[in-house]
Image (cartoon, rainbow, N blue to C red; front, side):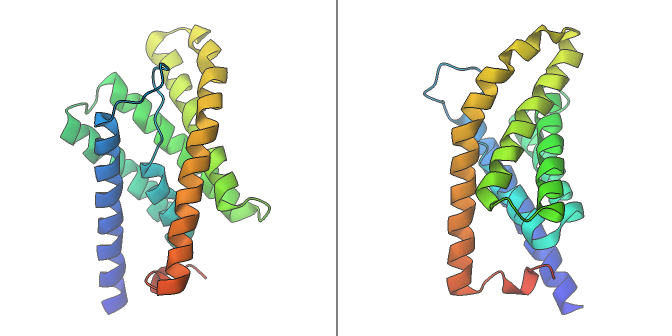
Length: 176
């Protein structure tokens, strides 16, 4: 019972952190002249959740982050919400599949794949919203921008996990 409560509280904290990062990142001005490019810092929390708890909880954190983040920012059910949702769903699915079925990718590699999946998911949603496939011409630009973003988020997660090895804070939550 105590472990279930601790787990639920920890998951709630992960949702809160992911939501805060989602909202904060939406307020930042990216110094690049490329529309739609962000670091994707909330994906650190999604990937951490996938690593610690598995697909179901990682997917829940990703969904809750998008819903709560767009509610807070006034974008709920807008086209921006749809883009964020499809990006979060596609990146979470890809990262979960890589974590579960492969051992050849590091956290940085999984993060890079998640960044690419996020961009592809968003562009597919944009194609549906705009009813045009011409948006896909933007894919190479977003994929190139996704490389440093995925690299940075993967390296930040590695630092977090390395810190955990020293502190042991997350040891109670590791999947077996």
